[in-house]
Amino acid sequence: MSEAEAYTDAELIRLTRYETIDRYGISAMHRRQAVIRQALTADLLKDLMRRALQGGAAERGRLKWARALAFVPLAEHGLDEWDLRRAACENAGVPWSFESSVWWWRLWTLYEIADPVGWLIEQSERKEKGWARRVMEMALGRQAAPPEVYRLVKKCRMAARARGEGDEFGISQA
Image (cartoon, rainbow, N blue to C red; front, side):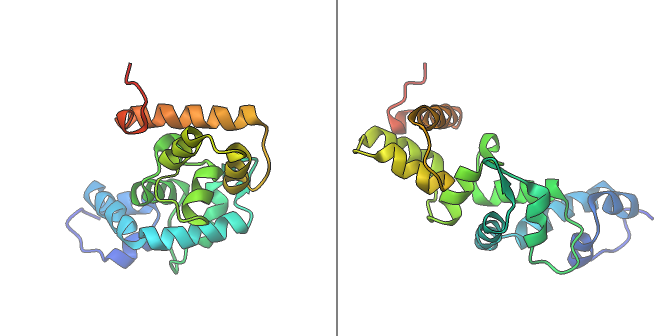
């Protein structure tokens, strides 16, 4: 079939990436990605990820995208792990370096924290008594050793620098 043949948005969601390219070509594939991003809105993703985290899609601090697919609320979809991951990262604003990090998704979904990276940095800078324990209980649902918390804060600082927000959090760009 040629790229000029007609297709519907619903059909693009129903087809897999490979079926879309085989039937309709690369332009339909680009349209499919846009349709998926529109269908998986930030609010829908928040609910999907909340249910996925509570339903066993997390293992040892990592989100298992294949398991999260079971919670996609679209009827008859051909989405795969990559489709869900890409839509989630783009619509939720998660940095790619944390795209499978359970702590990021827990803070974003369960605690409604819009920017978990920035929030974690802010918590560390406040240095309130017990902040590390409280943060890790929220982020991972368990207590963690202080070195684990400080490593996570260090990763967040590097991510903030990479997205050009170092000055906002008092982090030097050098």
